[in-house]
Amino acid sequence: MTIRALVTAVAAGALAASALSLYVAGRRDGGQIREAEIAALTRERDVARREAEGERASASRVAAALARGAQGQAVVSAFIPQALNTEDGHETLAAERAARLHDADRRLCQAAPDLIGCATAGPGG
Image 1 (cartoon, rainbow, N blue to C red):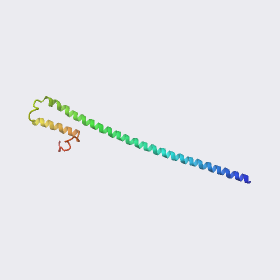
Image 2 (image 1 turned 180 degrees about the vertical axis):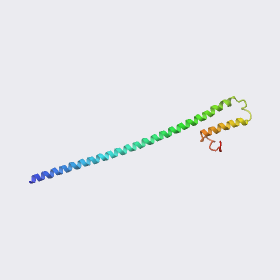
Image 3 (image 1 turned 90 degrees about the horizontal axis):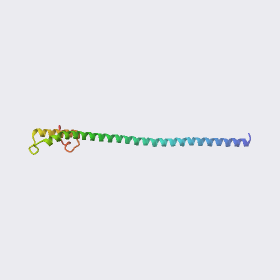
């Protein structure tokens, strides 16, 4: 083998080694880029999941508030006609009327226990 062939073989080997190292480095960099993309997508997924959970919790609170409002409205709408048609509004409260008022108050507190006065009420209203 001549010196020229030896130098050519060494140069070709060096060129092949360089090409191989560039190929491996490119694959490694591509993998790192993919890992960064995966991490970013994972963070976005987690944020979206937390937002969805928050929206569900908010919708649940709104539904509960609407249900309490409907229960309260039902109690009030049943009570108002009786109150408007009574002729003894200026007289001392009769026991039957006091019981009706107490029952309406108890049902309101059951519908919304966080109302002022409901938390301090004893057992049974």
